[in-house]
Image 1 (cartoon, rainbow, N blue to C red):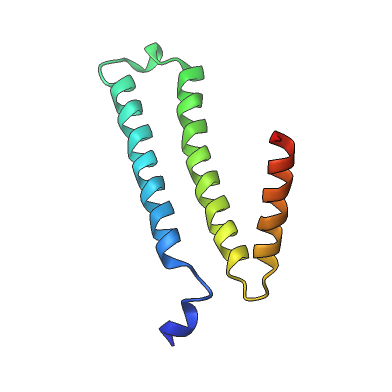
Image 2: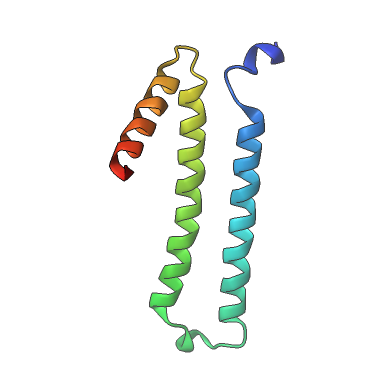
Length: 96
């Protein structure tokens, strides 16, 4: 049963992406903790706090995009590979 799921999900690639996300979450958490430590609530800059939240959301967005990309690549129809090849050709022509 599990071997049937292996082509469906690329666990190794997803594991790497989750490790990256986990590291990024800890990085945002540590920086936020450092920023707020020793400051009173009225001394916190709301714009700076919003930037921390934006970084947090960006990590989720990046992880979701990686999961979606892996899902497309491994959907069994080959559509993901074709889409990736087309995107690569377009990116190459844009830079060349």
